[in-house]
Image (tube, rainbow, N blue to C red; front, side, top):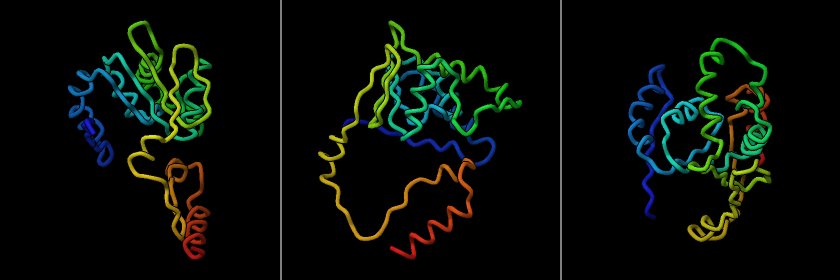
Length: 179
């Protein structure tokens, strides 16, 4: 469809993020349009320090998109809601990276910022909001089909410690037994 996608794994051993940054640095510097999915990701924020693109698009990441736009509008530093108030050594070391990312998310005369989302957001002045009506998805894959059973999506709240793993596993097991 005219789009080249490259997967670069940044998770794994302790050196994986730096290896991924090295592998992507040239591509990111040469890109004229950067599309990202998680503006709160420290890895994405680190990549943004390399960006020279005139266009930056943030694609929907669920309710996190709403929080991202709200923090931009309030002029706050970008922090996941479950990490607010932390000021440890890691946050101090990464503060310049976060500040640079914040600037990259601020539109200028030569730099546009777009949020592509299905969520109800009111972006600050200068940020374009493009509504995701899922038209491409419907055109590409057809209407959704509903099958028997249940689909389970999203474990990030468990991974981040917001939701306790034991009740989550119990709920998943109950869903599996029921469906």
